[in-house]
Image 1 (tube, rainbow, N blue to C red):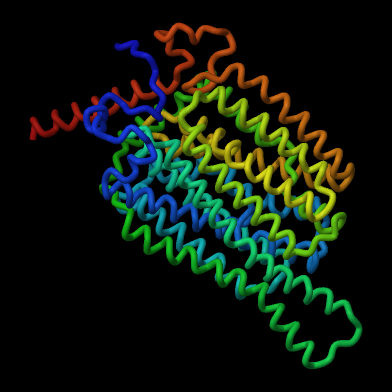
Image 2 (image 1 turned 90 degrees about the vertical axis):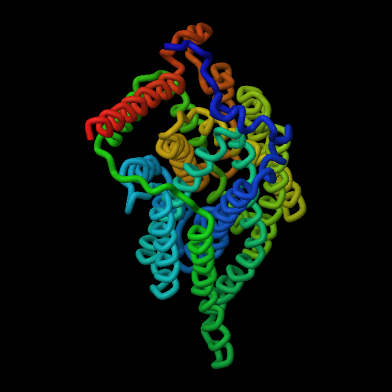
Length: 497
């Protein structure tokens, strides 16, 4: 068995070198090389654009939903943190979605049918939110359904992206396109969301008055309908994505094979015995679980700085707009640099970004802080995603990448919940100090980051013939063996037949 050096999945494999040797040197220009590749990139961008609109945690509906929970339902910071934790926890079980789609095809399809079903579920969730009463239980149930369907859809999109991008060394490029599109969606949706949120906030202020005339009552009812219009407008996005999926996604139909199921499960379960896998998983979780400022910042801006929802939407727009620039910088500069260097830069940038919130004391300084933190945001996010993607062996990338990203999502959900509790009991400054201390310690872990993932702490990864920690190479050999056995079985059956 060959002891060839383990390759990153973001480099062309030997089987694709000949077919890609005429590609342009610039990776970004490779997207324009063929019509099918360009269509796929456009579809990935559209899928993440829809995700940027419909994401409960950061999309179009986020600010109006926060306003409803705070002003109408009178939730405390920790209660709102619990609400969003309950919604985003569906992003933390993404490996289950990956296992289901990888192992159990529907009508012979591992991606296409699941994409259509999850998009339809997302549409049903937003329509249900439009018709259901504005009460905590209804909001929680249907927001969880919307988050679940979007998370499942995201797993399928990422699996398609990795399977396409790995042979062509375009994973970093496609991830940059996806995140830029998501940030663009979040940016252009914040001002309309702020207008709707301000309308609902104004309605609640009027409702506190003792006397209201008939004309004012009609105006209030129109403003109250704006809460529902948020969900109705959002429901347009899954409709667009549904038809785009029918047009753009092409998948070979495959029959369910029990032998393939057993082989794939054996390959997947074998990953858990490798130390490198566990180090990557723990690093991604611990880094992401640092106390977050998202929910706490909303209460700080509304209660301490006395910003109205519309001005908060301006800050969010500024933040996301700079996030687009951040994603483009990562796409053109950082995506081609060594993993260790990029992670260290990203961690240091995040430390300075968190510390900058100490200077957000009024409207002007908050604008500058939003610019700086937005500029740092996507470089940090994409550095983690790129590390996760480069650590996925072939053929099970949907499940394993979902597992890594789930660690990031679950850590972020816990971090936001912790941040809201720390803010409620200790204050905003204490939250910033704790977050800085937490993240600062994770930079030590980058000493064990290699170009192909996190290396062993015992230093025996220098021997490239030792596959104990190079689980990508081991798993690929298992996959090749399983595929060869399947081909031999087919040849035997055909010869005996």
